[in-house]
Length: 116
Image (cartoon, rainbow, N blue to C red; front, top):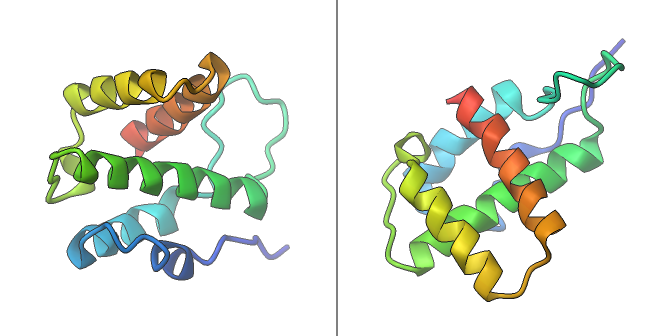
């Protein structure tokens, strides 16, 4: 059975706010892990759907752009630290994003932290 994986390179091209080298490093990480399930309680052994992979990639990339727009010029996605996540949570709360939305984004970052 062939496994479907989101077109990572095309998806990353939509994020002009990220540096080329940063996107290249994200591409390597995403190609290896984007289809992996991060939930330990999920019963299905199936990989994530392409739609969910794209959504995860989109939310992570947009968050990295938000960091950059607010003065956090990460040179590598592997440089992500707790202070960056704290800043994002405060930013999202200031933007009046609902708690469920913030929790979902944090779930994506929890998975990402495991990848790096």
